[in-house]
Amino acid sequence: MTTWEYLTTPLLIHNTAAILNNWGKQGWELVQVVQGPEGGLVAYFKRPTAEDGANSAGLAAAEQAARQFEGGEA
Image 1 (cartoon, rainbow, N blue to C red):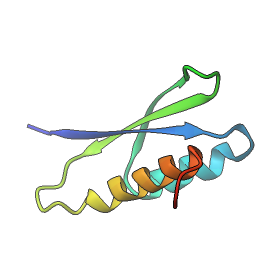
Image 2: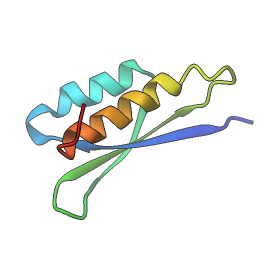
Image 3: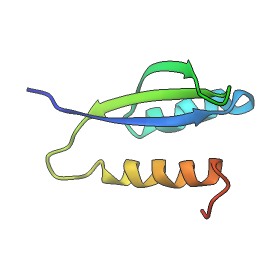
Image 4: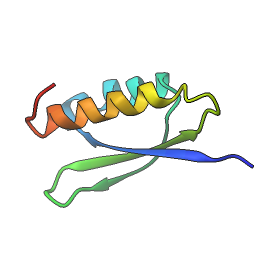
């Protein structure tokens, strides 16, 4: 049975294609885009989990992107 990991990230209107292409290159599949609670767009992604933990690099990148979007440390 396939197991999945999920990712949510802000989607900046002026850079949509670059953001989506970046996550796609890392194996993430776009599932849905919805309006966030503060009016911006949020993208939801999924990808199969790796048994060897190889996907953890993508999660670290997601955490860094979230911090940058929120104005925290990079």
